[in-house]
Image (cartoon, rainbow, N blue to C red; front, top):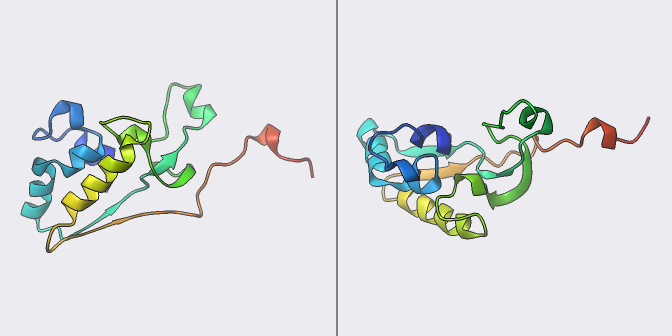
Length: 125
């Protein structure tokens, strides 16, 4: 599940929480999953990632998060409470809320996809 994608347009989640860990932990999101019979949630990359320069130059952003720069650090862009460490607490609250009895939560920590250095930074063959 993509944290931002799942919560961004959900009508039961307050607008200021949409696209965030707190939005996923909101009762409307959790209750929706329970009504669907979901018992396990696997989160798409939620570790800190970078937006590639070639995307930024086009006014785009890295939606999927497969460009890690901070393994095991929750992505600050998914936080509603702040980006100076507050995202850690918000992430923990989300996990606690989503791991009530009868459910599980897991995260994808992909080590095969990581930020690549710019071509100009690569050593010559």
